[in-house]
Amino acid sequence: MHSRLAPPRDLFAGTAEHYIRYRSQYPHEALDEITCASLPLGGRVLDLGSGPGTIAIALAERGLDVTAVDPSPDMLVAGSREAERRGVHLDWIEGDSEHLPEVTGIATVTIGDAFHWMAPHHKFLQSLDRLVEPAGLLAVLSRRAPGAPRPAWHAAISEVQARYLDVDPQAAAHGYHARVEADTISVLRRSPFSSIRELRFSHTTSATLDEVVGRQYTRAFSSSAVLGDRWPAFDSDLRAALKAAEPSGAYLDTTEAQLLLAER
Image (tube, rainbow, N blue to C red; front, side, top):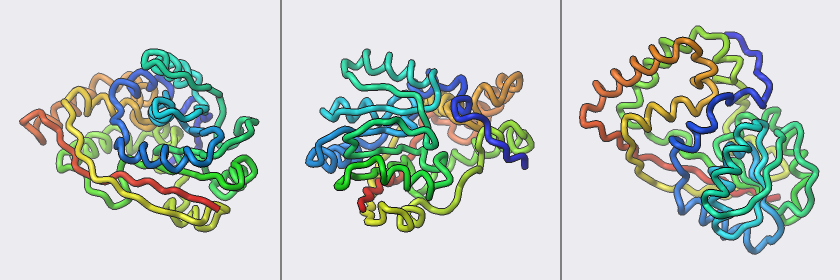
């Protein structure tokens, strides 16, 4: 499969509004843990790969001083609007793992479901080592922990994706199955942030058909930019497959989120 990666700022083209509307939130307990770990450290929180601020805005609402960093200008604009709507202030900076902002006083770095984009990880984590305060913290949060279950109806999504995306070189160019070096814990253990505490949070989400479908357009490999003129057919087939897999129309997902708190 073609493995060229699109420029970071283009990976999530056309996804920002879908992201805000449809992406599921992280468990409140996980965000509370990050807040509790960060507050004694003082200083600033740097949220990398922030998208439109899913983590950054939630931490700002909890009283932390947050700077959100993302390579996509569209994500930053959408996040700024969402933060204003929710009545919180934070800073927004365009950047990526190879172009970290020149900021000081960073006590905590957060990464939500974006660590796989930050390869080569050894180089990225060495850069963080120079950026983060000596007593600082790296928090890597995933909505679904490795090995955590997926709902039965998720197989319908995978089947439709396989028909539309597996032979699409642009999907690979947008990073599908790319840049995965090893599991995150193994990578961190070989980094300056090798002291790791893993927390898992069982949680159940409920979504409508529109929400489940809408989430597919928040992803780099199945965005509207990748699907192009096949989007209407993909959407129609996906809805039909999901309705057949879960006729009730209530798409429940009981799984585990993972939070890794890594220190030096």
